[in-house]
Image (cartoon, rainbow, N blue to C red; front, side, top):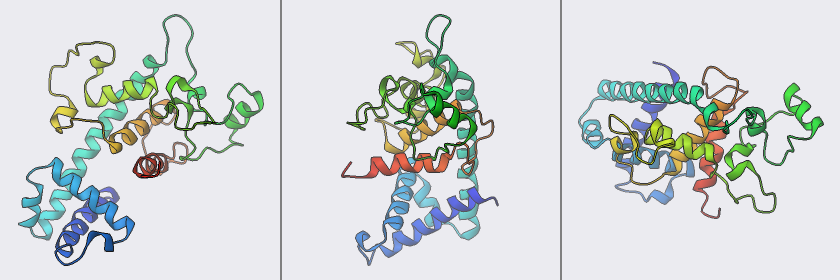
Length: 242
């Protein structure tokens, strides 16, 4: 079993254990990490209507098999999204005519001036290392960052809207008022009636990867720093003060 399957298995086993413990304890008595993990477990139970009953009546081997099945489905869906968007995202950033925005300009961290030759050179040669929680300007509406109001336009860029439609409705829904999909979209399949925090973070991470030169998606890749990128967005959206 690979590490990712172990992660799903841990989620399932810990979730079941906490479900039992909650019969005698209050959820607030658990650590923040435990509560977050249990929240993810509960969301998974909502997505798969029969999962709770299956887990309750399963032995250890059955739970392992269920975890592997979930991970295979997750990996397959993510791979399809990654492959499709990598090829399509260039069309979204190319205006009509002969000129287009450079992907490197869209990936420039908010707060840096891409038109500054010194900044540009340092980003290109690696003197300026960009961590996953240094968000690029492509996350902002009109690809502009407002230092006085960092929330202004955040997560409202045209690329993110197109990427969200690409993954959760259909590729044709990006340009057409009436999508010409031939099968149910991901949103309908998963009974999504509104945008979720996790789906925003997921789409942003996929778009971020698609804009980079990386060819293989990996959570531990230092170039994309996808895990920290995803977590930093989700943590902001989970922060009640924000």
